[in-house]
Amino acid sequence: MHSIYIHIPFCKSICSYCDFCKVLYNQEWVNKYLLCLEEEIKNRYNNEVIKTLYIGGGTPSSLDIDSLQKLMDICKIFNLDEKYEFTFECNINDIEEEKLNILKNNGVNRLSIGIESFDKKKLKFMERTSNYDEVLEKINLCRNFDFNNINVDLIYGIPGENLHVLKNDLKKILTLDVEHISTYSLMIEDNTKIGIKKIKPIREELDSKMYKYIVKFLTNNGYEHYEVSNFCKPDKYSRHNLNYWQNKEYFGFGCGASGYIGNVRYTNTFSIIKYLNKEVKNKEELLSLKDVMDNEVMLGLRLIKGINLQEFFDKYEVNLQEVYNIKPLLKTKELIYKDGNVFINPKYIYVMNEILIKLI
Image 1 (cartoon, helix red, strand yellow):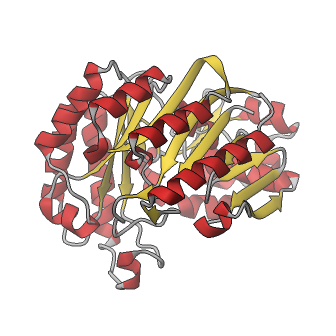
Image 2 (cartoon, rainbow, N blue to C red; image 1 turned 180 degrees about the horizontal axis):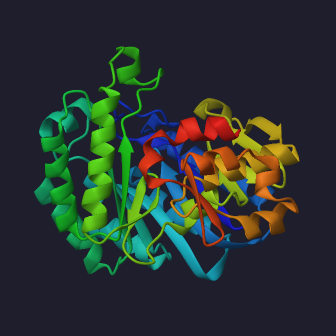
């Protein structure tokens, strides 16, 4: 066991595209939720040494001061490794000195900030509010509290967006000089505001151009493209997310959280009412060895360096190429073998799902 994810579902407003487990902020529910969260953790956590801890949402930074301190007190239950990574997700509007002080004093050493865009039309579409000056001011405030590992999120592919808008967003993000950048093409899910309105996605050709431009721009400006959607300065990988992509075990605590322990994947209820009534579990899936290996391949090939064949053999006592039809994809150069690793040809990263379908 290496990692823990904690889900805080509360938000002050609901973004138009959000498909995560979330609910509008209600202080009475927050108080009950933290009690239930603490009970769930105490019931399932057995003092394992934890290397990465990630608090996401929802909007964890929406918690008021007392609730935030209560959440940090709950986290003291965990036996953290000496070189732990502790990430806390923030909305730019919530960042203030008192909250940063609590986070810093309680061991948080990485912030993930949802910026999404600086373009007014994009922000209006996403039902978000912020601007470049505020973002720069708040990130400088984080630096004043010695947070030296900051991620920002960018969403692109908004209906009506063009390459010019994307380029402006990227130029402004570059000036923030953050350690990590996550970029996501807009996904229109059925149960979101834009899904209900039947909003149509942008053309795939434009989406592909945007993706390729992002990769070129960020790599040309000193960021390593280490996973399909993620870029970082040297050695500033998201260690928590690497744990997912390397198919390692993790706890998921809170409403809507998922976990992976042994050969079982589980998901907690998405219903805040059920969670507050301590009906925590929603679904458990017992995985076969082939299921586990399939996940290893699907997740591992998201990494730009791909899958190490020796590590795969050490883990499963079988050669990767004996289980999966790799040779034809090596011939077509959709996959590449180099230095003991098999990885997707960078030219085909954008269509990686098609390659995975051929494999699995």
